[in-house]
Length: 228
Image (cartoon, rainbow, N blue to C red; front, side, top):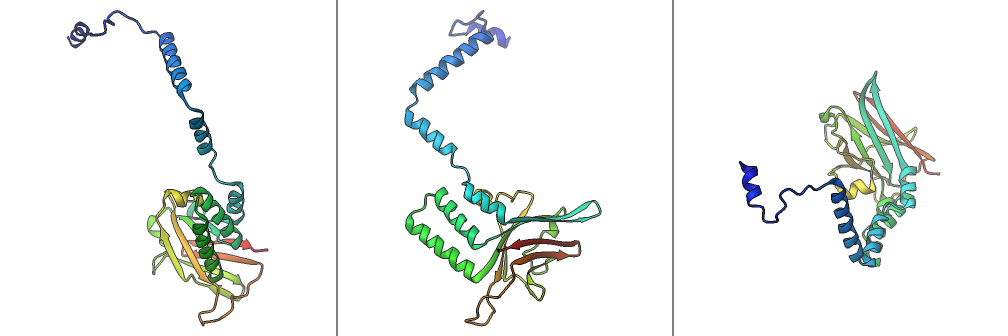
């Protein structure tokens, strides 16, 4: 048989030796002691440093502060879950610090990113949202003939449509900075102009509170923010 042939050809002469659980444990212990004894102190420090590079408290605090969620139900049936964050100047600054910390950006790279964020905040009100719908075809915010309409409501008389809706492909970087996203949700950025279309116009005035309205045949979801 195969067992018999393997016993006959055993080059180590282990036939008849019983390896007990205690012997295995002892062997594992010896191996661990050997490797630990050979580990350089710098490697241990490097491991501890890499283990402590989670999200900074300031960024997490701003993420929580500016994130909202809304849902649409029809009876007991869920129609939409949407989670969104307003990219306020305060959040942008926190994002800048976290991004440059994570990627250890140079001073020049940080200045460029800071300039980009400042210019974007002056021109647009921007939101990042993640949306889930039970029917995949309903998750079409970026389509011209979407199932939904999205408005930024600045006050009772001023309601804006987005200048741009972009669907983003989820990746580890986006998932880190916007952890409310998931494989079951679609990820979008929404951009609303802060100025009138005519050149040289001043930013639109608004109250302390504004709303992001997502509405369609399945219902209406509303997320509110206060800037003061």
